[in-house]
Image (cartoon, rainbow, N blue to C red; front, side, top):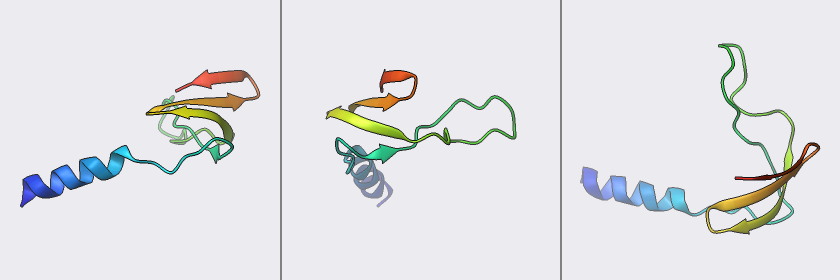
Length: 64
């Protein structure tokens, strides 16, 4: 039972509904214990190719 549930959860994580034009939040590195998990600035998705995504921010275009 555990193996089946693990595989089904792994498969469900792979697919995402992110499309070009969506605004997303990206995770940021923890600098201290009070810093947030996500960058508060929203990023705009320019292009999605498989698992890789090109996002646009004020600083420029960032591949993820």
